[in-house]
Length: 273
Image (cartoon, rainbow, N blue to C red; front, top):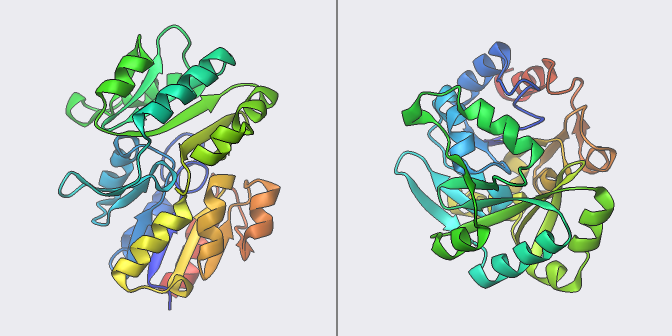
């Protein structure tokens, strides 16, 4: 019997229109009464919160690919391994010189450059405006990444967006490899969190704290930043829309992509049958 369900968000729980289907929501509402349902996401906690509230979860959320775990009920960070500010600053300058767009994830906000905005952030800004002001995720522009890094309580990660060859050249730098754990989260996007951070590592720490064996976990994801938790879990599942390399690491592949009912049916089978 599985005791914990670990779920990626984008490309997994969320459909392409950034919603949770009514069927999946119904299944998750039933499952959460029996076992822990845990979001394990590349998102900042401010961008995961609307869905956490929609499902009325009570578990913490693993954010920024394992960089930290956030407790919404008490509004505090439970575990973290944030970037050193000097490393964040050096990396930002390297990316800037390479002409790569960036998003800076700091303590309670996602920051982007007004003069060189990242494509996906523009979509997220529009999405954030759909919420009432008191619930609106903080996704803000800045005219100085340097000032933002120096003044932040935490720097969680830096997201890069650009041509694949430019990204590859930067993330294969020896210092970058030693300092960061670059993980592809989209075809032209790389999440750069501190070395040692991954969804699997943070989930493993949480399981130890809760006295749950990895064999008692089902984990589902769709991209390379999900591989560590898919491999950790007793049942690791890749979505049908997952990258081929992710599917190769999984025990099972969902019968539909994130726009279909395959995930809901699979969760129903393993947790509610």
